[in-house]
Length: 394
Image 1 (cartoon, rainbow, N blue to C red):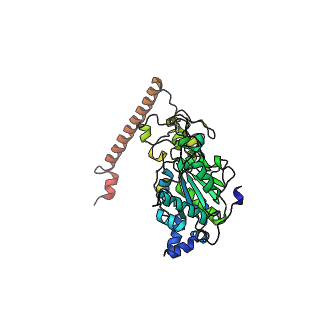
Image 2 (cartoon, helix red, strand yellow):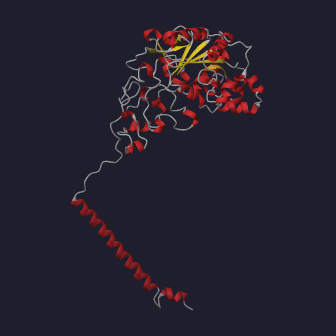
């Protein structure tokens, strides 16, 4: 299904063309390609060590993808994450890299103006735009829990999603229901793929997800009309191919059996493992431990001393209690304590102590006698009338 996507029309503006119109130099573009985190998976398609020039050559020819962004049952956290991008900055992102045609949080228009903007974007780019969905879709009582312009969320999704070239479900809510789907789930919240299983959809779960993951997916699709390789949950493998535990900076403490017992205890202050505090890292596939937020070291839950809640896992997040320890599936159980580092010591008997003392006494006495004899010999040789004295006299 994901191998038959429709590439964008070349009539649209490329990133290179847009950057030239904006007066951005080639040098700046190369820096952009070097620093852009999404250039890693994008460049790896070329070679294992793609140079900035190689990435720029491909990235520059990419047609700026038109994006329509819809909000359903969400907290806008995914949009907030997008606003914090640094390479590129948000202004460059929406003006030069992608073409953000509709976004209810960021646009100035509202009401009738917003609806007209949406209709115009759909008509202009029908079959060419990428639909990004943020938030879960309520299905309970025939969708009565959410309406926009007189239409239920299900109707809006069917209309806008049906004309999209592809759909990206951004965040855990859009991927599989997220927080709104937690028990007792009064709204019947579901993810996009639950309602459009046969459409070209890729899930980028997280609460919130890393925005560069979405940008990497968008650029690859814009380049050749394909999505990155995905796992069984439609997540891109380049971002969800490992569990948090594999590269957690606290992993050594897990292996040594060194665990935080209470927030603020000595182990917590020393950076010990948070597994016994309910950390879901061993059962959570995500890149948080290696791709920190806002390009700032340790800006992710475990980095600030909080356990992972498994927000990218449908079977874990908002279903397993926060402080409940998860079952270990892919790794061995941790030891119960630190391995001992002291050697085995025996006791010394009084007889052995006496023999050692006697030996030390003999050595000390012999040394004293030898020193006295050496001193006497020195005195005799230097006395007046001695052979040494005659040989050196005037």
